[in-house]
Image (cartoon, rainbow, N blue to C red; front, side, top):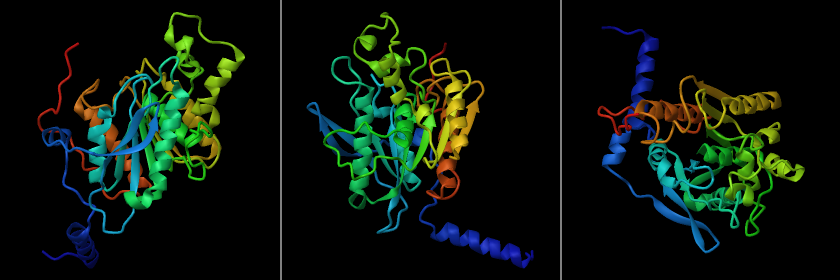
Length: 329
């Protein structure tokens, strides 16, 4: 069979890419990761209140010697008061296969009388500063650091792209704590709504959920200060925002308001609304079947590809046999 010259050229380009690209990976799925667990490198980025705060780091695959990789900082949810990095360990491993240096972080949790949401944010800012300050040693491009979070982790990720201040006294403020891109799954972006204000105010308002809802001007101001939707302005980093319309924890209207504010400011915010999906849909082995989680991760992959940070199509696929099964309702 004879091919036209243009087709022959395309075939040669495709073969060259297949043979020589260090970024092309075989398809992966969550069942593979669960069957072959890989331990991350643990790096302490801060010591707070006698507790070691660490980055669970996975080295990028397919990166040439001397090449600085884009980085992805993953921030778990749990209402700022719970959760662990385990929620995103599989995702961190996946994006490392896509050529990103991934850092699944720990941060102090909010505890009445000890720490609050502002401390969660201070720790996340410290983690981002640590990565940027040690970029050369970590093999990271300091100008391509994305953050990814779900729920309260989504709030912290959004805050890293929109809020200033909330710096720990030990931080080197000459190093930027602003993310270069945001991947936000069902984030809380308005803490003045509903009972989210309790978490922003902390103290007795959080310790006793039956106490009157905080409404004093200084309490509302504290909640606004921690709410990304009120701090959107031009030239903030691009964002992917995915939210479920059936989310009963964080109303989809929050996502819609954030996306509208970003658009008005001239910022990129790709909003995807999943019509019949509830909260925390991206966490593996939690509330959603594997295909829903895989689709959500693939969207993040495509977004990062659109920025030119990773190459090719997503390599994560749905397992032939379900990687996990959900309990029957």
